[in-house]
Image (tube, rainbow, N blue to C red):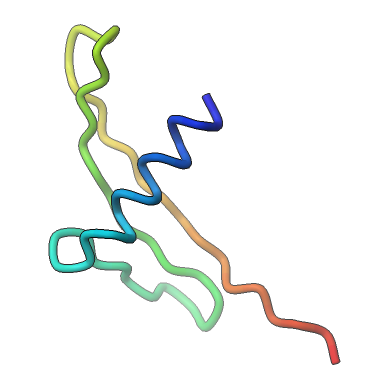
Length: 57
């Protein structure tokens, strides 16, 4: 499952005009994608949330 999620995130990041990250706070962003995986009867909507990691100084 991890490799599939990684492929979806890479696809989102490689297509910034189609999938826009929306800031919901100073450290969180969200986007969504509909994915038709081969073993599923219908496509599923994924909501991806990313967190900006602030390095500790």
